Length: 340
Image 1 (cartoon, rainbow, N blue to C red):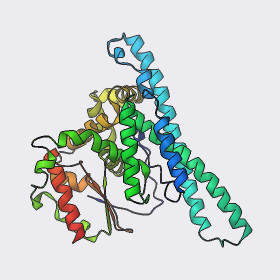
Image 2: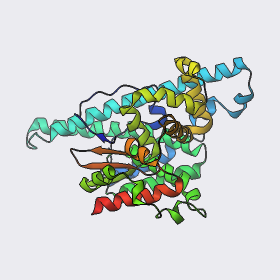
Image 3: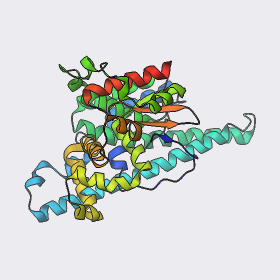
Image 4: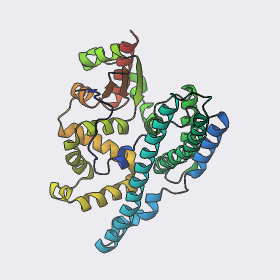
């Protein structure tokens, strides 16, 4: 069923390296930043992506033909890099949470108070730190996408900036926006081909969309689209027991191998280096659907959306459910219901 969010402080089980596939939220330090800081942020973001994705440097393609001992060394080295990225993500998440807490506290302090002025100065300093931490996370995702192609990096950053500007920089989370930008760029060309979603996307029966979801859309005050990777994160946070089985299927390993945590970590790191998180997330999505025997309607209810009942905010997977030719029409139907 679609998620009806419970208490904000509810703890969720930490899932084994899930953040390397779907990534953690980074917040939005640009929301209240002055134009000059935003400009510096985007310029620095483009330049922070290295000429080659960090994981590719650890495991080049010839490793596929390497001896077992050589491959083991490469896997171990790559896992070390991946683990550092996990630690970095945790630190960025903690910093973002601390910054948000401080921001809320400052709202209740009178501006004329000296302590308030000091607090605001400290908040400004913390915001700069948060922007740097945010940039590190976004650049890692961009590097995974561009794989050493600077044109892909600049194109993605340009589109990323345009979308944020169109939203007046009020996006909930910068990572969510970037992941959807990347997904749109990867799938965009294929969907524009003859018979693709752009041509036949509107031809979808309303019966494909469950009544519960259409009703939720009508109750929503706000609807936004999300990437497959974001929707997978929500799904596994709600259904942590499904994660290992789905990941085992996606990685093409046996159940016994999947039960070996070290082997699983190394294999996941290897696949991330070889095909990247976007492609692996697509495999993971297919594995979930196969594992849970999801048709389009079941997928929409269990995986296709997330609803915040308190804020009446609906997050809708843009390409999570249905065939490529159906997903565009499904999204159109749900958004149309939300506008009525």
